[in-house]
Length: 214
Image (cartoon, rainbow, N blue to C red):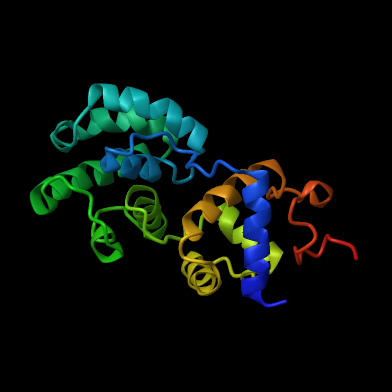
């Protein structure tokens, strides 16, 4: 079985198991900048906690302009429960200023331009491109890296860019974004970091995890 064939089967299995492939970060699709901020806050923090903090954040700062002109210390106090409060606040404020000054308040729709924003890496950029703009995207978060390595879709590398490149070669472009969302759900429920529950896995028949017995 080729990796493309394995990927196709895994996609089908995950679709059946998790029909609703949605981002675990709560956001308004008409406000891409809010999703961008949520992704920043999710670094070294759970999505659940981010979803508890962002309503407070956006209640105080409902617009890009209000964040761009905010007091950094006050902003940091609000986002501090997500960890790295000071650095995240600086990046968020600087990015909102840049979005307003250079992009007219519109979040860019290309990888190159997104990566020019302070604190934005490929994970954040891919999520924006996939969820907001509907473009093929591969979000190589910890779940994606771990599970695709176990399943034999990647070579086991822990480097996000290498895993992204490998997956782009074998995933149907129109499926890639939702595939990554489903991996998050699967990674939380079954294929966890601590122990893979192989006996409960919907992909057990095609997974190359060493825990699977013939």
